[in-house]
Image 1 (cartoon, rainbow, N blue to C red):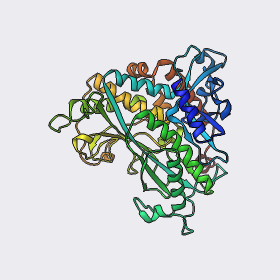
Image 2: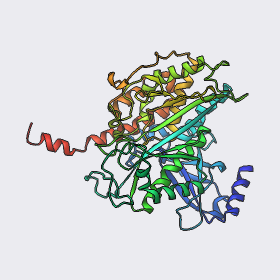
Image 3: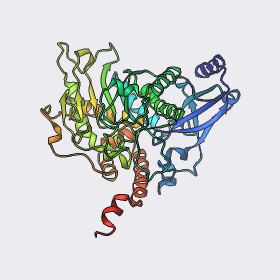
Image 4: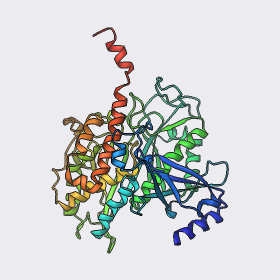
Length: 447
């Protein structure tokens, strides 16, 4: 009742006429429906549970009916008042609220990615621990492209010219897109997003936005909202924004780096630090868990066929499981920080991830590392790109790994992993049906 009153007061305060009832799907995109504000609190919200089982192309896996165990019936939706936000791009005064999905007996739906993250966070709460994260989101601005056979191009900036050279951390290059950036911050403020700094990344018209550190579920909701918002701002400026992991062959990929530390719920102490300011056993076990279990959850960090194009040498993306102190060539980086702020940066996730699954996966790896007291390797010294590539090279290879570890299966649920794997294998096979221009160029008359 309290949450219902919160939402009712919020609707009245902002004179909202329509509500977007949102559910994150398996890809991390928004599914749902529009409900007139007057009806929003008067009836139970429901959606077909099949929306949680769709591929990125809108198809379903072969064992969809078997796994759902239903005839695609309705699931019950519960609005989370903490996610209520104004939609600044809507023509009418519109609100949006993210909903939790429940089965008809009132339990969290096993195929809801938001429910998966909440389950992992509950495991930490049971141990008296509170994870803290800070995501970094990279994305590209590109010219509008309505022909998928055409390569993407950087848009024209204020100067009337597209970028043609690497402009990492360039202030002037970022200012080329000042009108877009100003609207992005204005929309973000209207939606209550904790956006911090913005930089120009290495790629042409590639930007990075950092979020202020905080609660993992809240920040997953914010990243879910942010990606949708950024696409809307770009359309307002007659361009596209893309979170593809590797949208252009000649440019670096886009990542979603996740900084993470663990606090004691009792006193707020960072458990990665000892009393005398050294790195603790918990820190090393958490790090060991990331090293040991990341191969099994790689498909949560790289969820699409395009994701694996990002893992190449010398373009700020990891290629193996090494870790190092302030070493950006490793997949796991420990930034320079005082003991209160000791943290680990996971550099494996791409910008194309489902934010709920990617955050759940990195926290699950660290959790298992601490529970099982996994020791990490020694900190890597030097350039990790000189070592062998030790990550999966395709989505299909990564999905095989997801089903190999019993600890991961227990944390995420065997049925969830089975559904996720089957959905992604459908996408992989659909991709294999496409003959690329490279094949026509080099194989048509030469083999």
